[in-house]
Image 1: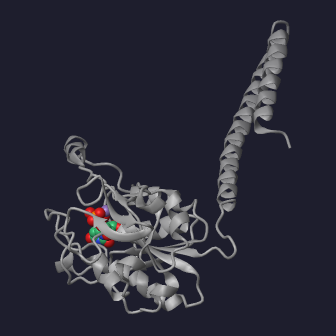
Image 2: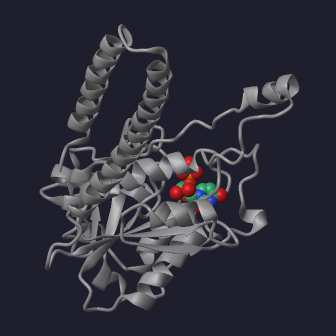
Image 3: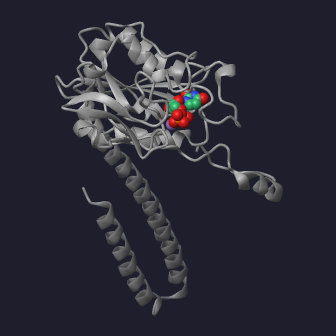
Length: 334
Ligand code: UDP
Ligand code: MN
């Protein structure tokens, strides 16, 4: 097949050669021949324009084919490798698609990965539905609404009420219903705004009961972490509420699937004190401190960060409306 670039060059060359002979002819030909020639030139110019449009279309098609091929070569399934079941609560806000894009593009690098995404909404939104469909990932899409009186108000500080509780429970419910004690895997609670190193997933995949590791930028410290002595967790490096049974962040532990299925009723709760979600769930699994498996180089490496995205202020949308009568185009999904 002739490459588009070669074809384009070839067309232009032909056009210039033709122009040259045309000029040469015009210099001595009679008048009626001239008008005929002008018509011919117009016809040829039109043909070239059509060809150029065709070439542009060809280029677009080629880039699409390339993109699809790229997706296909991703390492999605490796035989006998335990699965990672990641549970991600998410909710509608201006930054949602950006968060999900960043997260999903990390997840595309992980083999044997199943993403359980639970929207805090009465119904599944079109944005998330379309997003997941085009993500190239294995996923399950659910929704579970947080009752209004439990939901954060615009002015509330973000620690006032629990976030993602019913959504994580819906994720666990799906696992209990759809997986059995033959499934090899690990459960990980993965908020949509954190930052995850790919190295983390290699470490946690082989969790036997419950594995733990430090979380960067958490609890008002540079990091919070389990304290490890002789390969065993002996204490916790935290400032906030160290008296909690398991004083750690949601991003700092993973549970073996078979082990969880021994306590299939274990769930998070809307009715616990602030900071006690992790402790509530792990207490129901009857794990003791020395059961915990330290990961990330004996908890000396940070492989996940509790990042928070700044809330975007649309301060110029109103100004735009005042000046031009309309804001930015709402039919464009952001
Ligand atoms: N979330 C939710 N509904 C809400 C607020 C948050 O489902 O009303 C989700 C959010 O998308 C995230 C998780 O719950 O995956 C934790 O929320 P957030 O990141 O706001 O909590 P923080 O990091 O501040 O503790
Ligand atoms: Mn967060």
